[in-house]
Image (cartoon, rainbow, N blue to C red; front, side, top):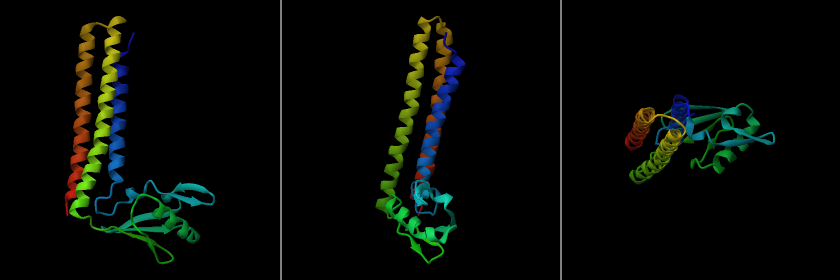
Amino acid sequence: MLDVKATLSTAEERMEMAAMFLEESLNRIRAGRANVAILDGVRVNSYGSMVPLNQVANVSCPDARTIAIRPWDKKAIRDIEKAIMDSDVGITPENNGEIIRLGIPQPTEERRKELVKQCNKIGEKAKVEVRNVRGEVKDKLKKAIKEGLSEDNEKDAELELQKVHDKYIKKLDDLLAAKQKEIMTV
């Protein structure tokens, strides 16, 4: 017979994963302010293997418009620059032989609107995942009735599932609203 509590906790974990996915994805979107998270996807060729940028250099934000990258090995500067140029960050690095600087340009109004649309697309993917989890668990509960689960327990579980679903949809909406506010703030 179906363990209702375990099923609901698994569903909640999957919904939490969707929220974490959204949060990480939104952190990578450049909103006009320097944020080291936009470099999370950058991989650098270091001694023949591709490693994350933060494993070959110290990445920091000295001010709101600049990201500074100080490689631990000065010879790696060219590789780091190449990795940034090849990535989808969209910023040209400048180096002075010791430090690589990324100047974050102020986005135009049109670019801000594009970024908001991009955030909404990612947010919709996360919401679809949350809804899919709800649908799958509802199906499991319906099948469990045939296997001996009482209808009252099924209805209670469905109400609990709906509460969890609503909580995560609200969480996703809040994350999106915060990111949109950050993007549209000049």
